[in-house]
Structures are given as structure tokens and as C-alpha cells.
Image 1 (cartoon, rainbow, N blue to C red):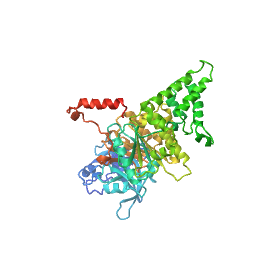
Image 2: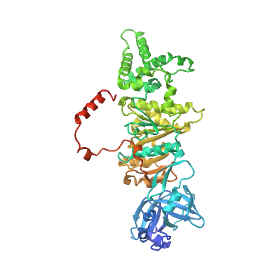
Image 3: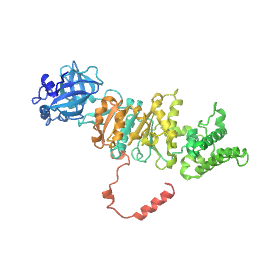
Length: 553
């Protein structure tokens, strides 16, 4: 079969060069295939767009710009993914396109109306191609009457608002990805502020590993850290208890776990709340005294023959007493946290009621690193368990935001921190059935557990510098958005590609500027300025050493 070149095809279909008025075509459809359709563009026509007043038309023919074509009474919209000069004719550009969606042609004006994702009919080769104007962009990206928030403007226009559909985005989880320094924290704060403004009675829990979001949500959030979190240790389930109290490995670990399970169940059973429990298990959130647990361990050890097999009991008892006496753990293992405060704790953390502060910021930055993953595990599991046990109640959906998500959902199944990995993976898979939404923020998507990113219905990708991360995100993106992903390395700070359930079609967005007092405390230090300053070093060191020794108190 004799394949025609681009220029022959172009000539055969009589494409008009658009050196005349703008309503002429800029090219024709060349090839239609499921995933790799191509168009031909006349370069002489493009030069006439270079000085056009409309910025979208000035962008015509560039990678990332959009084109439209008429099929019957419908306008099809496609995005240009790649462009190549025709080898035989320097006046012809061959461009790969991805179809985005279609809209009806408005009678009389010829404008696009009722735009929707996906297309019902493909064009035939030879169909004329036109550039998309800013007025068209307004129609394409106009938010419909679903609940939405504005987060920025659609590239390349200056004033086409980019809308995120809140219900679709939260209903199927979302991920915000971007290398360090691309404006990830500010973008997260922008999206959350907009959602809080739309839904002031919301319920959002955010895990903040660097203590940077407290400054951003001072006015509309409740901030919790080691000084006021007061997380009762008895809320931990058995798996989490093992991560804290069991230090051994291999066969010894199995033995220690069995002993801890038996003694923990006995300790929970001493509480009068256990008498009313139909079925008491080691996982039941029933308060118990740490001193009861050590006493029971001591008693069990006393029943053994002298000197045989006492080592596991001593190991557990020593670890429990060590944690009980360590002031760094007092936010969780204090003797003051024995009372049944579960209801008050859930009300405080889940903002039930929200009292105009719909977001809880859990600052884990000052917590000992060996217990951080357990704290995150307990909080995440409380969100999920609450949703399961409250199924028969009026629904109060909860959004859980996990910053630095690759720490808690690593792609390794060995080592510590497996309890938090299991619960976050479970929320990713099952959370939406129960009204739990997951928001993952990470700079290393390739380090996330496999499959978690593909559970996120909306992906907000900022610049990613690492090739492995880019490939990982491409694999998780829906087919139609692949073309947009090629521009991820070229994104400027505070620009992103959004695709998936939360937007009508994949879009490149220049994010809005967030007011100064609503920004997180994450700006980079200016070395050139700060290294020109001196004075007061002794006082700085005195105050710092004091805080260091007193663990922040």
C-alpha cells in the first residue's frame, strides 16, 4: 500500500493556508487512531496568528495548545501533544493530538456549548482544524452547576477560571505531587482554604510532619501538637501496641507478641467498661492502666518455673516502663490519659461540630521519630473506624490529608511502620464507600506503595524533576491526559497539570496567589541575605539549647 506523505495529504484535501482572516482553517486531520491521531498544520497560517490579540490564538500550533474541528453539529476539542516538521515539505507540521471532549455548536453564532468529556464520533481525515480562542476556552472550562472551587486560571489564558469539582475530587481521593520547591505546600493550602470557604462545616484532618501548616490555618483551623494533642495510648489496637512495645525480631518477636496479647486483654478486662462489652478483644478501645499491664506481666512471670522463659516478660516490662517514664512520650503515655475521653477526643480531632474551624492540623514534627508512624496510624484508623461504626448515623464525611505520604505508605513491605501503611492502603481502596476521602501530598510518587496512586481519582501534578517519578505518574494518569504529562518537567513554580475526576477535562493551571496570612511557613531561607547578618548568636544558642534540653517546653 502506497502511504501518502503529509504534504500530499494536505494538498489532496485542499487545506487553505490561513494568511487571510482568522476564520480560515489552520490545517486538516491527517490520521485517526485510538491513541495516536495526527493533524497537519500549515506553518504559513501560523505566522498570521503570532500577533493576534487573543493569547490562546497566539499559542496555536504549540505543544499544549488546543484545536477544534467540526463533525456534524458538534465541535471536537483536542490537545496537541507533539509536533514534527514534515520531512518533505518545510511548510507542513505534523502534530500528534489527544481528544479531550466535545461540545454542541450553538446555532447562529457557531460557538461551543454544553461541553462534555469524551467523544462520540471521530472526524474523518481531511476534516478542517481551527485554533481554539479564549471565548471557546471559557465555554470548554466553564464550571457547570456542580459544587466547585476556583484554584487558578487555565493556561494559556489570563482569565479563564480553573475549577475543581469538590464532590468528584473528594469522593474518589486525590494526590498532589511535585518536587521540593515547586510550591506544593502553598498549593495544598490554597485548595484546602477554598474548600473550607465553600464548606465551613467540613471535617478535615491533616497530618503535618514539618509544622508548616499551623500558620496557614490559624483563623479557620484547630492546631494540635505534643502540647495539646493528648492522644490516649489505649486507643491503639494490638498491631500498634506491638510497634511500640515489642522490640525483638524473628521467633522471639512472635513469642513477645503472644505474651503481650494475653496480658493486654487481661488489662483491658479490668476496666468496668469491659463488663458491658459484648465481645472484648485486644483491639477494643477500652481504657486500661499501664501499671496494670506491667503488674499482669509480673504476675504471669511469677507463675513460671524459676529462671525459665522470663526474658520476653522482662523485655516487655522494661520497654513499657521506659516509655512511661520518658517525658517525650507524655502526650500519649501520660497517667493523666486513663479516663474514658474517647468521645471528646473524636469530637476535637474530627471537628464534630466544627465551630467554624473545619480543619484539624496535627503537627507531628516535635514527636519522637520512632513513634510518629504509630501516631499517624492511630489517627488514620480512628477516621476509618469511626466511618464504619457510624454508618447508620447521619453522614459526616471526613477528609484525611497525608503530607509526605511516601513516609507512611512506602513501597517496601518490610521494616517498621507497617500498621500505618496497611490502614492508609485500606482507606485508599475502601474509604469512599464509607465517606472517608484521602488526600496524598508527596514529592516522591515513585516511593509510594504500588497501586495507591492509581486509587486517586484526581491527580494534581506540579513540576517533577526526577525521571522515575515522571514515569510513575504517567502510568497512573488516565489515557487522555498523557499528552499533558510531557510538559511536567517544563512547568513553572505554582503551575500544575490537573486531570481525573475533579476536572471536566485535563488542564494546565496557573494557580492563584494565596494571601500572605493564609500561606504555610515553608518559604526557603535566603542564604545571600541571612549570611550578611550577625549579632545575638550567644542568646540564640542559649534559648535553643534550653528548648532542646527541655524538649520544646
